[in-house]
Length: 219
Image (tube, rainbow, N blue to C red; front, side, top):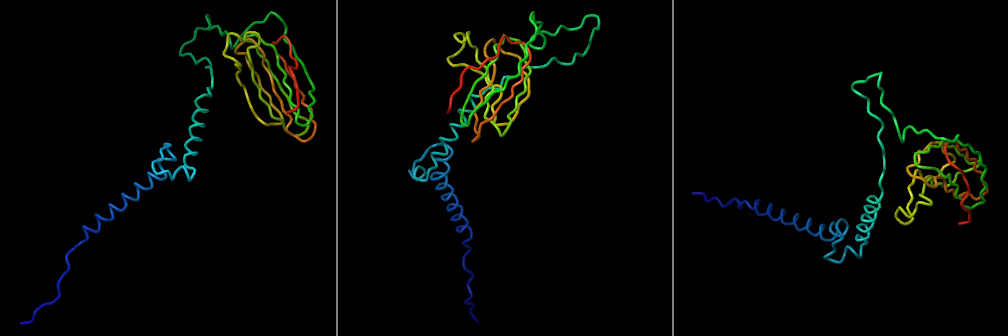
């Protein structure tokens, strides 16, 4: 009788699969401790994340989040389309869409000269609900501009150094209109970022008592 010496080895695949799962789990745990926790949550139990600069990513994210929280976009609504309408009794459209002024509107065209690195601020004095249209352009190059408003003489009713911004940009021209959200100074800050002198032509028309230069200097 022939004796069969061929033995089938026991199946250890289940043991190997279990070891692979444990290995993958441990690798994921190490990655989480060293990289994910410092970068995403600012937690660095190993101390390696700080040495790799991963904690700085968390701080930068928090700064961006704080900045995003502080910025509020204030928007109004236009009248909705009515479902029914009586042509004998139309709706009356008031502020800020319509305002009757007792005085005639003003208009100005100014030429503002700026040397390289020079900055200046021009403001129109407006009452709440007054409106202006404006247009300005640079003769050569671009300029940094911050179009904003502050409450002026009524500043004590608002938080310290309060102002609102209409637009901030680096551009060669801008055209638009505003309705003053409050009484005060409404206008432009310009900074010549070119290496040569420039001229800004500003045209303003609408309801304001005056428009004037509030100050200039070199940055």
